[in-house]
Length: 281
Image (cartoon, rainbow, N blue to C red):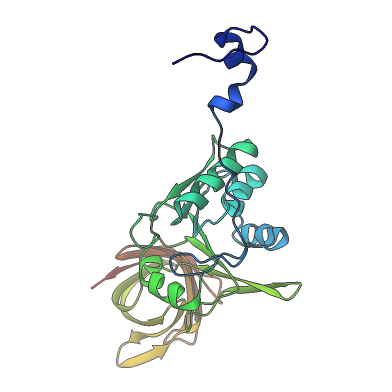
């Protein structure tokens, strides 16, 4: 085959002068609002909503943020760039995932943020300290059991859609859009043996707790009396409740849950202070 020349230019010069002819690429991928995905259509989250979501979760450089259904990577990128957190976005569409990773490169956060192609119902996200998402209600419910099984204290934020009867701990509104926040709670439902020591005395009691998500109530056995708990609260792994003992003295207990054990301190309204612990039966 005869090699073509232009004005006597050698072939090597042509390749240097016209590299685009040898490496021609198609148009860059650009996502379209409303384009179909695996289970949802793509609609980007406005920047002010992204910022509020991450502030609701109180993201810090110590956090690992995972965005479920990352789209163009906006949330994962903002978590890294504006809050210093490590982050990962999980996006099912391969072209969108590649586009999002390119956005992370452009934003200069590839050392902290990455977007991976994957299925949110298959990919492991249990190491996250913060979960963000903009999914449909049915998908939120499908993910809910896995989220509830995560470490107590994990923070969860959803744009627009709730978790059905798992009530949000906070709802924020921005220009007609809503963001919902939950704190994954410890599992305290059941019977416990509680021991309190203070004021030179120690006693053991049977504690029974009922639980529905972060809402708890219960009773404490004082001999033949089942004393109801007052102001029982569960926030992540933190628990607090009060009761009035057999001598008409109110005790306020606060502590931390760690698996099948709880422990903390108490203060009575007669000035007595002490420690308490409980072991699950």
